Image (tube, rainbow, N blue to C red; front, top):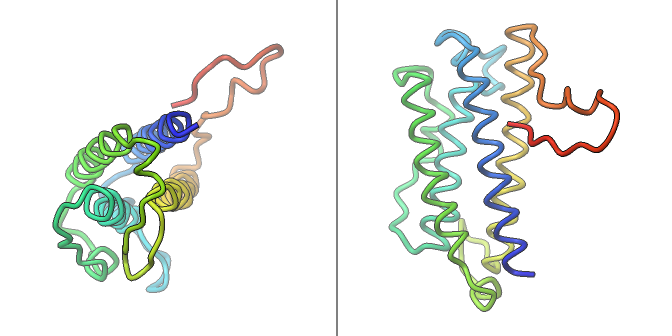
Length: 169
């Protein structure tokens, strides 16, 4: 069961990272930093935020690396970093996190950690990161659709008859 959980978590993080990469490839630098208002986050902010969150919760909280996150800076940024740079940072962070998650044993999943002031199990920390990553991936997909007016095509295979053995990006 533990292996099933960690394998699934890794697959979800990898799939969502690939979808973010696809969206970023469709956007201009201006679109990556576009905000409708001061209360909204640009795709760039969301990518910085995801990298910070995954690093803090998995690499630091679970993997015991030092925590140097500046969460406020993730949301305050309004440029200065290209989409390619942010994407590379996010991909590197997710790759490291997937290695940590993939190496977890069942007995480690029930250990407790204090992350962002929350005392939680390692299993819950991984679950939180996958859920949080998925939520913000959805926001990035929505922004990409709104800005490009394109169908991203991740579920076109569902329009075909028969079993759905395809793997979406």
